[in-house]
Image (cartoon, rainbow over all chains, first blue to last red; front, top):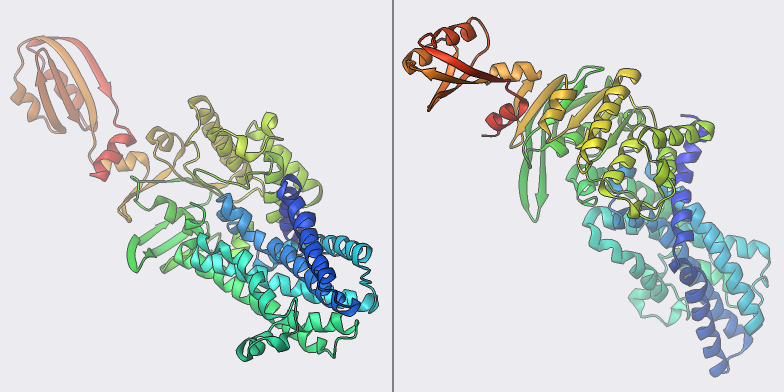
Length: 261
Length: 304
């Protein structure tokens, strides 16, 4: 198989997600409405509480990160979710496509949508609340976004793994995992206020380090971005490996047929 | 393609159900091979194993000279399947679905566009090419599935109930297309069907499955002969005959007497037919009707 053939296998997931998204009115809500409402609510809350600019930056970074995470992870989860809802999973898995083709293709679309959401929210937060998203420089933004996209892909893969292991009902994971991340990784508060066991858990989540890294540009303590990126990459490759194992298991157990019925 | 002692079971809620038991068969290059059997016989499961969608619990499978349990991706590049009751992403149009499928098979550039156009044209999907999959009729969905199955010019084509849901005219066209594809492209076709005349028209050899076991395997002619399913003859006559003379004719399997009419089932080999006619020498034969046995009879016999 030539490199162009391999590339098109990757782009097949990008193509499918793009077509479905452009036809779906829900996309407008995913990309603009909910992220904007979330940002606006948090921004107005900071006004009500009369907190300083540094605290405004702290919570807005969290609100923006959460929106990017949610949009990018769902794009990777859509690898299976769209097929699951249309009962067409076997059309994908009878073809000579591998897990990484699907993940990379869907991730590419997730990155495009994630960057679009970031730009919209950064512009809105700058205009409405005076938040300068480039305060730490372009490199900080790029590293933060790259880490968030890699982490999102891992969450999306966990959703796919759950569906392949437990069946259709596991699609609820697509909306719950990012909620758990929000609680544990300190999206709206420093992880130091969490109870002991949750603090330990937060140290195993890359998003915690990514948030600390971005916030450090606004004067909030130190960061361990290398550890955060290493964890993000570790989880990404581990998820990819487990996804392939879950696909093979679904072929053995017949789950692949049941998900198409 | 060669399958040796393929077994498959599915587990649901701690209960294991055996679906296939020790299926061994080989399918030669270029032949049209039918898998027949009643509902629940394991046809779709066997087809899914052959097409590498699912794995067997036990046994070995060789497809296109490769180990189908190890070299699955290399095999998938060279095969394709059209499943019964097909589904595709519902908000994609016919053309978009075919383009997406072609990309999954690694097609690119002009070959991708040409393959999609050819498939649309082959299955007369032009008027529906820009219609969303969810708006198509059952027959049109079936044709999309068939169109998808030829995109990568497969060496083995698996067709699961290829004419189910099609109107008689489209079903006939589809059968003609299947014949054309395997004759022109010299590919191997493996199909499952409930429709016996279709199997008889298309298949060189047939495997009958019953309750997950291989009940019979052979050409349609061999199966009829092996099961001693004979020709059916109905003779209307005037006068007197001796039914005992009919029953003792070698090759006559069944005799039913009605007023002025006799129905018999007989083996058409040897001199049976002329001996039957001689047994009517005391009467005038008014009409003779002979029906050849078909696969429906074989199916009913095997499904018992």
